[in-house]
Amino acid sequence: MDFRIFRRIFQSPAITSFIIFLSVMGPGIITANVDNDAGGITTYSLAGSQFGYNLLWTFIPMIIALAVIQEMGVRMGIVSGKGLADLIREKVGIKLTFLMMIALLLANFGNVLAEFSGIAVSAGIFNVPRFIALPIAAFFVWLLVIKGNYKSVEKVFLLASSLYLSYIVAGYLAQPDWGIAAKSVLIPQISLDPIYITMVIGVVGTTIAPWMMFYIQSSVVEKGISLKNLKYSKIDAVFGAIVVNIVAFFIVLACAATIYTNGIQVNNVADVSRALAPLAGQYASILFAFGFLNASLFAASILPLSTAYYVCESLGFEAGVSKSFKEAPMFHGLYLGLIILAVFIIMIPSVPLLSILYLSQVVNGMLLPFVLILMLLIINDKNIMGKYVNTRFFNIIAITTVIVVISLSIGLLITASVQ
Image 1 (cartoon, rainbow, N blue to C red):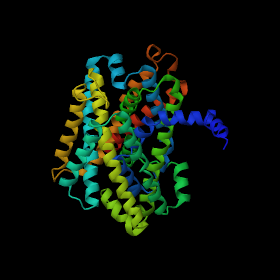
Image 2: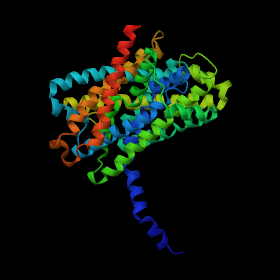
Image 3: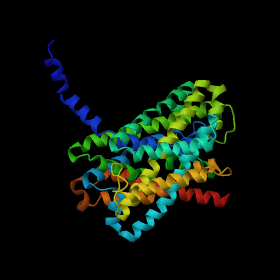
Image 4: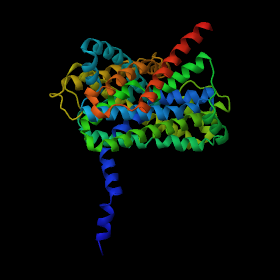
């Protein structure tokens, strides 16, 4: 057998580029997919159940905005070799950074609560008591990070990302009206109803969340991606933005085609899963519930990790999954503390799980502009980024995102006060 043919194939530029991409792939896809966490899936489910196909138009601009924001994150991390919190401290000083980190810590803890409340809801769908499911989940999440290194943890996260395909299958099984869906994507339907505006803020907040900007940058720094591989990391970031919005699109689609069309009232993801069984089939119901459990566990690992990253970076402490407890006690201690506290709170029977899931996404939407403004200040600083500063196009997209989110927040306050 002549092996020269195979040698030429594997040495071709296309194959070489693909292999390099596989080695770089991870931060963009993982960060984007965690946006479809427990709070996100709940928000998308409610969006489809309450508004039908009407909010599908939001995913086109969100793909563009998320792709640009993620690309900015990987570019800042690779060029500077520092996490976002570290750069913010250098840019605006320790006092302002500390105040911002406190606000983000509180908001992110709400997100961590949302993930563990998602685990509790998932356990309920499969008839497992929360006092059994939560401690087991917490131990799994802690063990994954404390006993692994960056490469092993990333492999688990990439596997979890691939399991989101269950929602695409569930969406097809729901047999949506593709004509109405296409029309809703191309022709936005705007309403001044406070509930509608709140839902739009929630959808934006869960698709483009403040924590992800810190996590993606810390990930590329810890992974050690070199400047020569920047273009491959950019592809990873853009690809992640596309995939996560496709999954979210199908979640809304599934609920719009079944629950909204049949006028069924739902209050949480458990209701959605049960409602799908007679409308779209038992497989759709099981896939939806399984996807929610996977998303909750996945994000319950990432969200505390993201928080530990940016708090430690902003205060100058050692941080990183590959570092031991002795090397980074603050990082590992904060990670464990957030998990234990979240489980303790969610174990309380009277805790309003749905409110935690939904409102945490709205808070994300309101915090987003402030983090984006700081990112823009840094990425346009030639002393930090050199020739890799933002192009005019990227600045337009990022600034437009800031303006839109601020406008949505102000619109919510005005319409709510009028009514």
